Image (cartoon, rainbow, N blue to C red):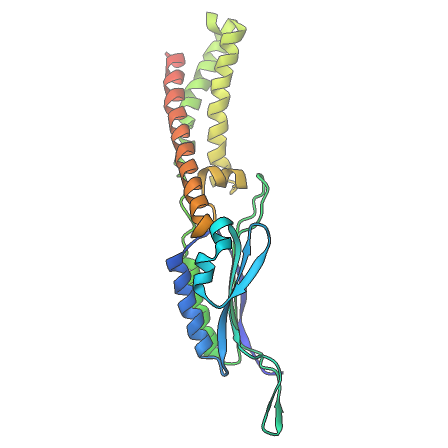
Length: 269
């Protein structure tokens, strides 16, 4: 067995891969194929949202095939491999199958339930019989992976701000426990007050869960980001729809903060 070197690693992160970003990976993997010790080629494998797949050697098929115009991509694999890896006869000698050289990058969007906390992933495999060659391509591809944007997300400070109305509501509650006002003695007024307090506490706890506990279920990422996307074809349309929903969600939370802050100060006065 020939000594091989390389890496087989998974990077867990949300990603937004554009056509330009895809072409950067294409350039590196095609360059790697040209430096294999025998003829090699770059193969793309695309899995769509109905779990069907197709393989191609053309980048244009990845971005403009009819399937990706109608369906989301959930996985994209790019692999530089030997064109003829089987055993072959050269003259009077039988050459063994070509192996020990491989470069592969896989972008995967996992299928998740609303409360699933798993993040999407990018897999990298580089394998070579040349240590310097493999080290060079590992560095180049890792740098590209780190540069892939994670996607936009709502700043969590917007959730932490709800500690201000929550403070005023709790202050009012302590006063009412010792000297209740007429509105507090009535069930409707008291229930309405606790509803306001509960909403403030709940939104504040969202920020605490995200930042302090690192809890980001898929439902949260759909509303506030980041979420993974292949930004071409149907994936681009869905990405733009999710971005619009994220902006609406952020506006609603901001509007709630203003309303609850005003109400909490009215109660405190």
